[in-house]
Length: 273
Image (cartoon, rainbow, N blue to C red; front, side, top):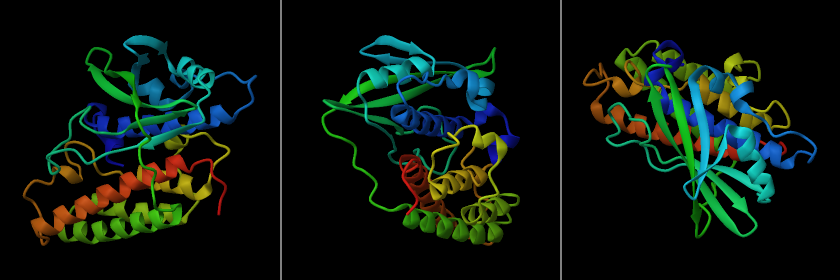
């Protein structure tokens, strides 16, 4: 995984993603938990929050609702929220260059009895603490964001095919060690033994759908959309591959990866088929 070997300041794209996955999955587990349980405070229990986040707060109608995740989870239960969903939009523009923080249209949709809310993150880097201040702001929706149409099985097959094609193009480009990451992505979809320890802390251990968990771990193993030196930072160095081949492969890979994250996150608590 590229970001594990580079400066965290270059890894906001991945950091935004896994934080939304953690909030969505833990939030859905919490909404189904018995009332006597305390809401989870991820800033004290999750390695992602502890290592890389200086603060996380939640605003609604311009007012601070919570500093930390426990207060936000408590708010969701008071509002009788029934479900959290990871939603996302198009890739960063321009696609072939390094992405910038807050440029991505992914968020958390909350379903309440009388409305839908979307919670959008904004990340600001603190150079002194070398950590991020993250603010989530709520906006009401007139109608819910469209649900994913593909099944877990179809989405996993699409991710595997995209990683296989990317592995072939990467080999033609001579893009080691990225080529190996695409191979590991495919392997992770087939094995239950390849979960990296640091990523397991991002997800509630139980209950979970095994395929959904494998898909999220496969994304973690083969994430190549980091900053300098990543798959998006290839420039004109295409080796034996063509620019058109690289760009079409990258577009397909991005769609497959983000679809996998959304489908797996939102199906994390569904029983295995």
